[in-house]
Length: 358
Image (cartoon, rainbow, N blue to C red):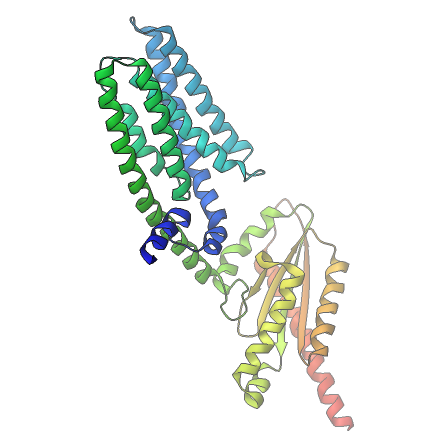
C-alpha cells in the first residue's frame, strides 16, 4: 500500500530517496560533528560538576560518584575525538554520536535506580530529548530507542519494587512509542531542511550551464588560496575564442555546447573545487603547489584536445611563490588575464594572416 511505503520511506531516509540521502551524508556528518563538539563539552562539564558536588556532599553513595566520574571521562573522550580524529576519520562521527547517546541513557537508567521506591523521570526525559539532538536516519534512532526501552524494562523489573516497576515499565513503553513517532517527524523536518540548505548553497555557488563554481564563489574563495599553499600557487585564465560567432552562425545551443566542452576539460585537469566560470566565456583555475612546467603542459594538452573538436581557447598563466607577506591575488589573476589576452591576440592575428594569404 502507498501509505505504508511512504511511512517506510520516512523511517529509512527521512522522506528522501536513497541516492539523495547518500549525497547528503557529508553534510549530516558535518552537522553532527559541530553539534557533538558542543554537547560533549557541555556533558563533560555537567558530569564533572556532579562529581565534585557529590564529593563535597554527605549522603552520596560511592557508586554514584563513580558513575559521574566515568560519564564525565567518556564525554571528555568524545570531545577529544571530535577535535583530533574526526577530520581524518569522518566515519567515526556517527559512532561517537551513538556513544554519546548511550552514555546519556546509561546515566538516566542509573539515576532512576537511585530511589527504587520512586518513579523514574530522568529516563523518560532523556528518551524524548536525546534522539533529537543530532541528525540521522529515523530507523537507526528508532532502533536505539527500542533497545533502551527494552534494557530499562529489564533492569527496572529486577531492581525496583514491583508496583513502582510496573508503572515505570508502562511509562517508558508509552513514551518510547511517542519518542519514535516524534523522532521520525522531527528528523524528517531537520534532514529535509539540511537538504534544501545544501541545494541553495549549490545553486548560489555553481554555474548551472557548466557545473563549475560560479563568479560569486570565485570572489569568496580567491583570497583564501594563499592560506592553503606551501610552495607556490598557479593561476590559469582561459577565454573561449569565437563564442559570439558560433552563437550567430549556429545558435546559442551550439555556443552552450562549446562552453560545456571547455568546462568539462578544465574540470578534468584542475578539479571541481579549483575551477571557475567567471564570465560568459571566461574561466579561471588554480593549481596549489604545482610545477609550472606541468601546468603549462596540461594547458597545451587542453588546447590541443579542444582544437580537435573545432574549439579554440586562449590561456594565460601566472605563478606566485609563497611569501611571508602573502600573495596579492588581484595582481596574480590580472597577470594571468593579461597573458591570456596576449595569446588571444596572437590567435586572431594568425587567423587574419591565414585569410590574407589565401
